[in-house]
Length: 76
Ligand SMILES: [Zn+2]
Image (cartoon, rainbow, N blue to C red):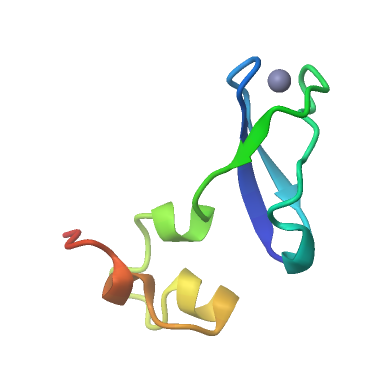
């Protein structure tokens, strides 16, 4: 099961949740204030700065798709 990152609009808390892909976009209650005004952030894998010299990148392994460095917008 992939892990997703969410942010609460009410208290600005960022949290991660392990959810099935089918429920990735479903509202996830904030663990801090129990509010439902949350939004899903981009994958934490893609935001990772690792993978410079370790073969397949984390995104590729997690999703079975193209490497994050391939789809990244011109990062370094
Ligand atoms: Zn909250």
